[in-house]
Length: 262
Image (tube, rainbow, N blue to C red; front, side, top):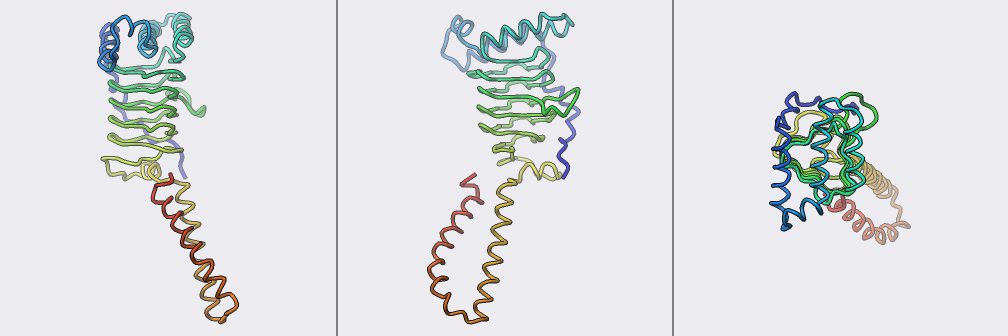
């Protein structure tokens, strides 16, 4: 099985439009203000997500000017103040909101599209197996819920929701919902045709259990056939006693496979 990520979209760099630093700062403030009842001073002094974005804008601007040391110093100061770690090289679009923020880690080559929402304990990191572009690209209006991990040089499409605690290792198409470990698509507007996209939709653990369940049923049928042919009356009562247990067990397994237990 090929576990390499899907080819990235050649237009992935367009998810972050070229905007002046002042426009970015204004969009950060307006976005946070829109979703908060706090006044301006409270936002500036008591909103760690907004503080982290403000400091990152400056660090990223200095990083673009190839100024040594200072961008990393600002990044370290930001992490100390807010608990949010964003590499100065990361590209973050306008209107992005970091909600709560503690424990957020965003890698050097990560790209976050306009209007995205990042919750606490989210990691946009690498796998340690790639060089160059090694962190994910998030499209526009992506929601990454608490504790989710998006790893490697992968592309997350526009309007995607990554559920809490998910670990995403493959590309995700637009307008999808991803959940689980490893992440799998539980809803999508798209027809998933490629092999890699189909693999992302499959729950491997449930598939393995389903195969084992089928084999057990086959063995039970073979035993029943053997008993009927050999007229083994001594085991008849045992089979009757176990019938209800088998039925209850089958119901639990089928409920799990249908998704209630995943």
